[in-house]
Amino acid sequence: MPPKMYAELARWFHLITAPEDYEEEAAFFVKHLTDACDRPPQTVLELGSGGGNNASHMKAHFEMTLVDFSPQMLALSKTINPELEHIEGDMRTVRLGRQGRACLEYDAVFVHDAVSYMTTKRDLRATFKTAFLHCRPGGAALFAPDDLVETFEQKVNTGGHTDESGRGIRYLEWKYDPDPKDTTCQTDYAYILREADGSVRVEHDQHITGLFSRGTWLQLLSKAGFDAEALPFDHSTLEPGSQEIFIAKRPA
Ligand SMILES: C[S@@+](CC[C@H](N)C(=O)[O-])C[C@H]1O[C@@H](n2cnc3c(N)ncnc32)[C@H](O)[C@@H]1O
Picture 1 (cartoon, rainbow, N blue to C red):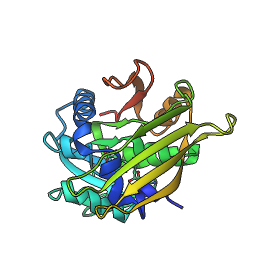
Picture 2 (tube, protein in one colour):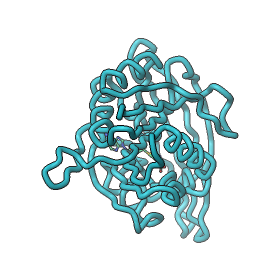
Picture 3 (cartoon, rainbow, N blue to C red):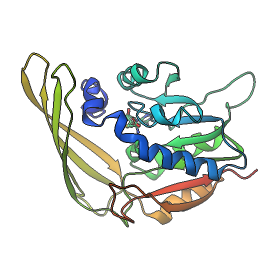
């Protein structure tokens, strides 16, 4: 079962996390993708593009193709990125082919927090294979998982937004690791949803996400054929060192 946030509650996603709040991180991803490629990237494939929040900023720099396995999230992303190509697909298996070539190759592949939904090594391997096959030699992939074993901390967070119509959401998010011996952690959400007519309801949602060590990430990226390194995710709202990204270059 996918989280409600990406299915029946998808229309609330931009009120949970607003596109305008992504400007700083999108600029960080643009810089690192550009630095990692052997020439300035023009075409970028995003896997697990969700609400299209990052893409809404990154599209000023790249020609972007967005893939997600949730039709509801693709529909939401189209409301802010109508000019971009949106494709329904699973990041573990999608193959965008064209005229006899095994896969369409992009200058770069971007997988933001959606990669956190890869909960087994097998899932990660499959996603890295998709990224490798869709990245041209000399190009690069960037992955931004929410957590690594080394940086994981239980946390509680609150947030939410209200739109001009009065429709709004406030949430409480509680992330923890019920079994430190497995490769997942759990985030429970309590959402308070207020419709424009003032009616209010409460929903519970649960997200199971992957938790792997930095060494596992680097080993699996290398096995997929990438030259990979981990870098700190620098952002004004993050504690220094609390999150990392992976830059994976496909050798020319
Ligand atoms: C947090 S949202 C991504 C938000 C995105 N970073 C943005 O900028 O708007 C996570 C997305 O991952 C997608 N997702 C999860 N597993 C997936 C998979 N196996 N293949 C494709 N998309 C997946 C979900 O449908 C959801 O839209």
